[in-house]
Length: 288
Image 1: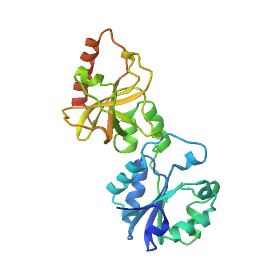
Image 2: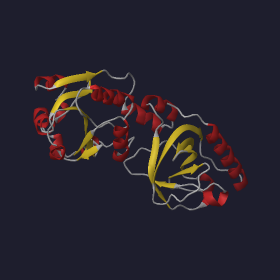
Image 3: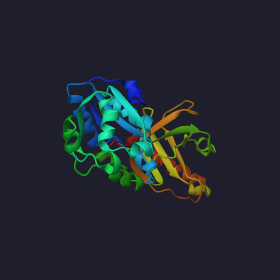
Image 4: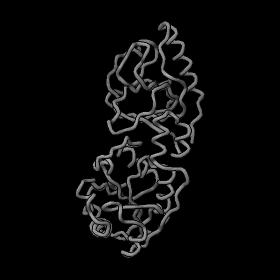
């Protein structure tokens, strides 16, 4: 998949285009991506980074990093992606000007968007305007009850199974593995300490079952109250994994929330509970 950051890098050729932020690449987004692929022209996505709301002063925690979003586009069969740097200047473009400077410039012919799509200054542009500008516009019906906003609410509350139904796959956390305090290894369960990008949403504190790198995982999110911690950490333990992950990017799916964090009367009780958590992760079922 070709990824460009300026319209000139793509060049002008007839293409089917969809555009939007696509945070989470959820079931509604997938419906749009399927529709743009079904058009008889090369499928192209125009998306934005950073997220428009972050630039406009109304920032939100995101469901996916840009890197993960691009991976989902590739999995969906998209040929090319234009990642536009979202700036205040871009936000001030009138819809018709945006269409000329971006969509016309890359040769967009067919435009595939959700039926409630808005764009341009003050979100004044819509499907009807695109049609008046001469594009072959193909609105896609919404998937009822599915939105990035609703999914963020569910993930923030630890309701990962319900979030998975709206996403069409389990929610995830991702980050780079960095050094931690090493307690997990001392207890017999070495964990990977994740440095999660600041813009990414982290689920509610607790213990989760999930998977990463093809291995089942038991994951702790929180402050480690048994040890009186006050800094939040995200620590997956990959079952039956033997290797060095330091410095690597790690994406972990969250399948179910097993329990709250808690302090124990002794370290022995803590280890016994970790063993139960690991067994629960071993038999957990991946939600879809």
